[in-house]
Image (tube, rainbow, N blue to C red; front, side, top):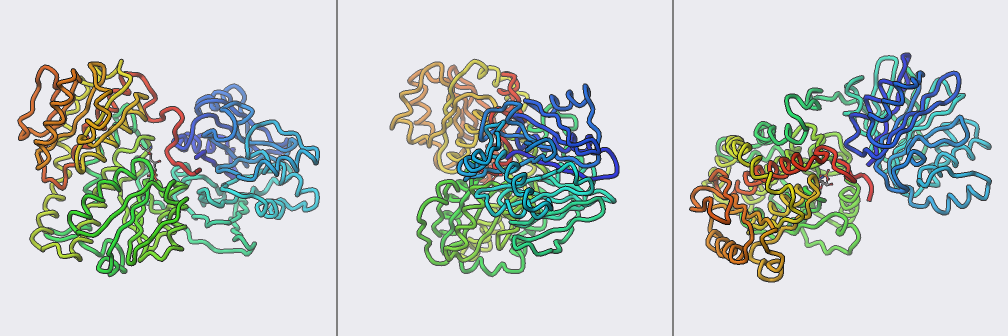
Length: 608
Ligand code: M6R
């Protein structure tokens, strides 16, 4: 997490950097800072809180210069104070911004203190800038000094470095944290994400692990880990810049909830015909599908919940074993890999540190192949996976994942059917599933029609401190996702259980203060779920039931009913997600929390 931006131009770069930081706020918003290099030296502003606080400092005291670096922080080492905000300095002339974690910062700090360096922050980052300062005593060339220092760092980093007497260049590097170079006309840039630079360029170079870059106005020179100059291809960004506008909506989250019908269409486009899943969507090497005998899915957070739904689909449709695990657990245990197992990662950002580490580990374990279902075409996960299925959701800015989740589910449904076809799914059943998928965008719109009603019931949650979500089958992961959304943006403690587990413990929590949110599609689990609801009602629990009309459930004394469209069973988890997103959104608005940037979180979790 944390976001960095850097620029070298013929014009003043302050505005470019501030705009870049605002676009990167989704990565962290505890504090921010800018260092500008001009003929008078390196000057800087830092501020606690959102980028607006930094903008206020620039309004009060503008900084002007043609080279600069900037940072928005998600605190890891040290509290969100001004002293811990980046850029960090060594002396007055050398400044650095960093995204990532330096794992060996403690021994390095001890060494530097012994040499007389004084530390002004609690951050791991400050060791890097002092190390470069120290290296410059014997290696006066900034580029070489940075290259030397990077060999001493353990952990993950993307950095930008400016030095006062280096008026024609600045240096950047990445290993384990994302960094792109933006290529302009007589100006060049760096950023943690290309979105940060769309106001100045649409041409990007994606750096590889261990790359160090020297940026001048006219040139970008990339050195690989061995110090050899490398040419890396330039890609042209192909999304509409307006995708990062809130438009008519008050929050990005709501805009993204409402985009789901169209982005699900984009996700389906070219992947299904009238009757079939088009396996060409997995690329030229789609023959892997016929060899799969097992699937291991690894992901984090919301993406993990999407993986949990896919387990039901794959085992049901294809009849082959599928396991799902959070990446932070998978990466630290000994994994037994059955032969012919597909390793499938899910990630909106494609930069989640745990998921990337899991992928790198999996590549050594003899999997059949690696497939990433991801929303960001240029991400590290996509680049490092053998195969990719993009979710095509467009940029997701709200920290709480919404459209990224439902498009992941859509891509997973395509994948599950493709695997099932190779495992005996009949052409007739395939056609039925594909027809169902084609009606998905319309069902999403039908589900969104409940927005006004859900806004009304959200009021009843404003003074609640806990909530319990229940579901069975594929509705259980959706219950988990609903509870994650509620806690993430409204700060209400929420848990989710498979409804059948209620009597094994959580029933003890039920009283008149505990809202119970039950997901009740009309399927073969209906009667069992209705019995679970009776158990809750008998204990005075307030039930919020999300169900289709055919369930014969409706508003009653202790039941608040919300209608969800009746859909084919396979689509139930996708369609039932929509009202839960709306519920958490409206509860957060009632509570007045920061919907798009909830406290303590960041959009892209690029640290462990
Ligand atoms: O980018 P990823 O999908 O890999 O991110 C994984 C999680 O950090 C993410 O889904 C997180 O749980 C969301 N903020 C949930 O809304």
